[in-house]
Length: 241
Image (cartoon, rainbow, N blue to C red; front, top):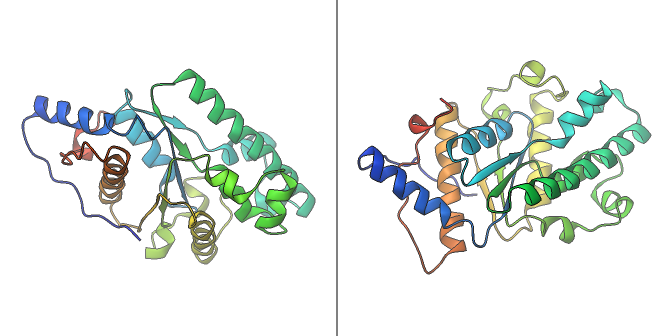
């Protein structure tokens, strides 16, 4: 599990902005799609929004398909029977692929920050992951290969800071279930060769700093001939704040 330390801020504002842009631009040649996954209350959506707002020339946020489908249907996973859960997951999967294709076409020069990947649906399929791949005429390997890298975020439930449906009415899990769902998602993404894991933090800014350092690791692996230092890509500089 990769849980890097926070980044430090160095240099004046203008050189800092140039170094930051140069560093994250090194992601682009070999990395087009990064999935943020993890159990409920992990901070996936907030992280995607802040990162995309801070560097709109590099990142675009692909919103979570599941919340959109549940909102449209005015329901939640726990209110459905097995047949209903399967049908909802099919709709989520179709929306997921459609969104990713649409954003990739409209932003060909940017990295997609995907709020949950298509792999995640396997954790919610009533009959288990193998039945999920079969029903959707795909495979575990094929879905993992859709993403150049993945970042698994641990749920805030692991440190007793989970707010359940307060921040997302689609959530139905209690803290124990949120932790269990996160663990299942981590196992599903484990075979990905570029999976990075970030543990829960009491301060979201600390977690965001660790996600950014993970992006730095991805950049160095994407561009091995251009190993750039990580300069203060710090939440204090975010225009979204």
